[in-house]
Length: 112
Length: 115
Image (cartoon, chains in turn red, blue):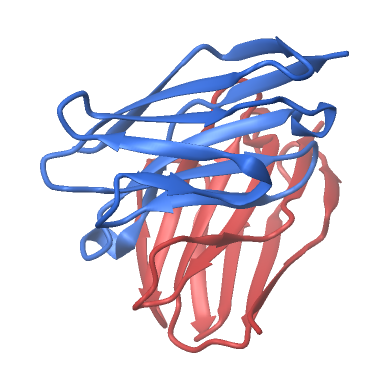
């Protein structure tokens, strides 16, 4: 069966520090991968998606970047965090022939 | 462009009462529609989905939703609320074959269930 792993579960980082959040998927190949951010009362905002290795589409201009160095690995990064980067970050995957997306357990990021 | 509007950011019902969470979508082509549930500090779990075929779809935990093309709606219902239904619910739309099949979500509706 397929599983998705996200880590860490929680993270507290100072303003101006770098960020690296990792997401990996098991049990499938060549999935579509997504990073979402959830801010309080604002629903889920799609940040990036990827349809293959090295292919990244950005949905909104921001202080973050994404990379897909391997087929089932999706990384969210920042060189210098801002207070506004705080939120709940969710990784998701969908099979090429599938319909719904499957979500990881999320990372709660607090920038202080 | 696709979009989703969920009417009511907070809905409160009594245990045993009908649950109705509203969702309207905008899409230039027939969409795929989804309802997800989120418990505090957790990821999203799929409740149900509409792709093609029967417009009344049944999901987990006794929930169901009806796709109404003429009203561009996909409202979520449950005949009798349980305390365990208290959570946040998200409606989403997707074009499977375009733009990576990304899901666009509504703002979410927090459901409270009173004893």
